[in-house]
Image 1 (cartoon, rainbow, N blue to C red):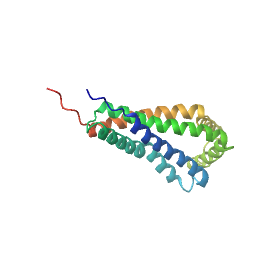
Image 2: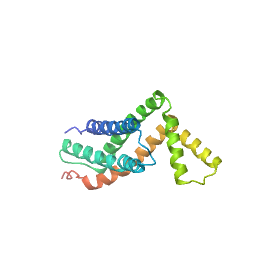
Image 3: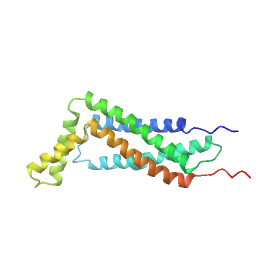
Image 4: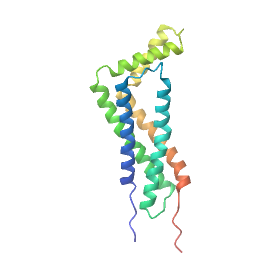
Length: 179
């Protein structure tokens, strides 16, 4: 009887690369201090890549690698396992780094809040001061690791499940039934 192939090895590799890319983006964007008023499109592209392009690309690569290791066969459930491991590995790595980064870089959150304030005032010049203060306090709270980390895990679990199901539907190759 042939032993089944575990999705963990290839999934951890692709998940690690995914997490590293998100960490690299955070460090680079912090280092270059892009003005969100001038270059708002950068954030749109980064978010599109982090929530759509990279998860799907790494799920596809991970499932293809697993299918190759599994003798050319892949079920949707195997793809779901693989995809969840990939997205959660990336999310865990990013979350750990984000927590360390926020605590190690003095003023990171306050700098981000200042940028958020500038963008909000440009988009809504007539906003009431109390409403602006409330919005900024909510934003500040949402950037704390205690809120960000669970949200990252929830979002990437959801993305991993949906993405893996879609990818698995296209890449699946079932083993022929034994007679």
